[in-house]
Image (cartoon, rainbow, N blue to C red; front, side, top):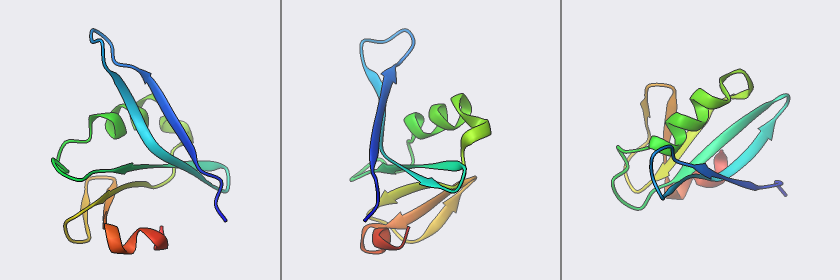
Length: 85
């Protein structure tokens, strides 16, 4: 029942793009969600997105295969708990 959005933008100085897997709205803020199957400690897209849209960002989430935790402002959520975001 959630409206999901995807966002991509060019990575400066590279032929590759940054991408955010899902964006959900919570009130007047947006919450980016990045999904990782491996290398979960690297979240350059999430970091750049939060910097670019800092005034509009609510909570940030990283869905991964590890335990529940925090990495600075990012809430790291195990895959089996993603439905509770």
